[in-house]
Structure formats: structure tokens, C-alpha cells
Amino acid sequence: MASASLPAGLVTREHLAAALIVFCLLAGRALFVLRNPVRRCHCLPGFARARCRRCRATGWKRRRGATAIHRFYWSVRGSAVLERRRDQLGALKEKTNA
Ligand SMILES: [Zn+2]
View (tube, rainbow, N blue to C red):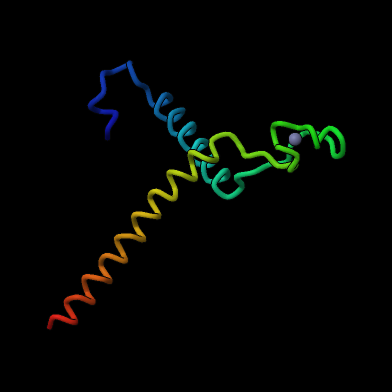
């Protein structure tokens, strides 16, 4: 166990459980924001919405952290796609050289 190497009494089982719960909540929130990056703006339709600066009259707002999460997601996905294409190109070159 990892807790065996920790100083006794400093980090208890309860601390680890709380940290695990917080991590799970943050991970769940990240997945939720990844699936639903926008939410309804609270401004009313009509004149108020036309002048709303938060949603620029669209009625939709990006959730907090949505841009950062999407940037991270696509930076990971993007490199995976590039690697796959590089592998395909390498295989094609080997085929043509042989
Ligand atoms: Zn608005």
C-alpha cells in the first residue's frame, strides 16, 4: 500500500478517501463540460438579450473551463491522429521501397 510509506498520523485513510472523492468529482465535471460545453444564459429574451454582453445575444454561454478542457482534449486527440497518419505513411513508404 502507498499509505504504508507515509508518516503515521500525517495522512490518514480519511484524507486519501477525501482526495479520491474530490478527484472523482473533478473528473466527472471535466467529462460533463467536455460533453456539454455551453449552457443557457440567464438573460431574458428580447431587448435584454440583444444587449447582453455575456452571451453576445446568442442566449448561450460557454461553461467555466470548457475552453481549457477542449484545448487539452484536442491536443491529446490531435497528436494521436498525427501519430497514426505518420505510421500509415511509414508503412506506405516501406511498401513502395520493397
Ligand atoms: Zn445573455
